[in-house]
Picture 1 (cartoon, helix red, strand yellow):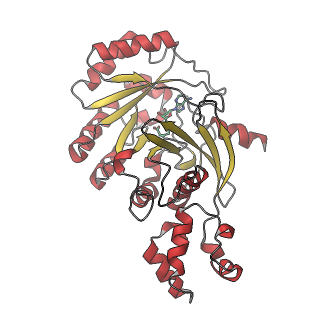
Picture 2 (picture 1 turned 60 degrees about the horizontal axis):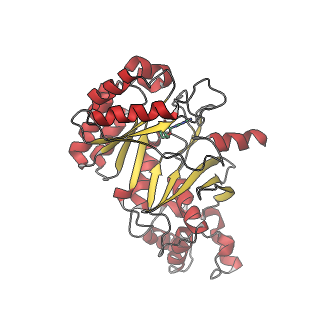
Picture 3 (picture 1 turned 90 degrees about the vertical axis):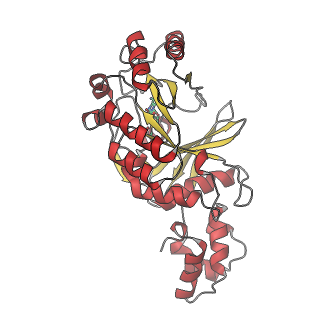
Length: 342
Ligand code: SAH
């Protein structure tokens, strides 16, 4: 049994099964959510620690980078040595953790560094929980006094390609037993796995849905996102309508501006046509060029024009503020830099 994948009652029950005092389950549960390593739990004897060692989480913070603007990037290492990255951003309204759902990714988007070496493996529910618990603690947070208030599933990996583990994670992290992070403060970002978006809607979690659209025609989308060969833009937007009908949650569109690929005035017009009448917001992202790919970022001025055009056409849109640029590039670049060195 992996303790971290279970609730307090189940761990207490497991204590009984192991012939250990039941009340220790409560302490184990508390220690894990507080992000403590086993050897830091002072109420346990070394004999007891030995007995539970194999069931207790061993994920750790491998490295931390702090940006001039306060953004922190973490490399998190799991028991098998695999590494993912997480980013912690502080805003006026709270602290948002961007976490990873897979080691690597198999979606193959042309602008993204996470997918350069394909998918290594899915993260387990417990590993995703550990990302949150460890970083919460590293910033002075605990189970009772939470530091992290918001989550975005936007790190490496495609969350809907690891559907069951992600759903279980969402259920646990938002429960009052755990960090009680409100579903309203959680956002899941996907490149558009249509069937899974509908399945997620049926689960009625009430989390926000973010679609990485990045193009306004299926042809252009296919040139940068292989998923476009399986799901059309029309199917994705239908799935978003379904999500909205089921959950009442407005959705977000992410649109990374790539020079000469998706940033023309006609694109802005087409994007507005696609989104007309929908309850959504467009986040325009400045491409963070990945050395291994040949794509270039749109100039800032052109991005502003694109944004203004969307606004003029009645679409709610803003350019996303880039944070922590001095400590690493986009999605997966920090990890890649590091993994290549070792
Ligand atoms: N697989 C999910 C979540 C991970 S990617 C998804 O596709 O949404 C998170 C966001 O970062 C996506 O919108 C993705 O398109 C964007 N992104 C990835 N690489 C980027 C880069 N080099 N520059 C700017 N945005 C990037």
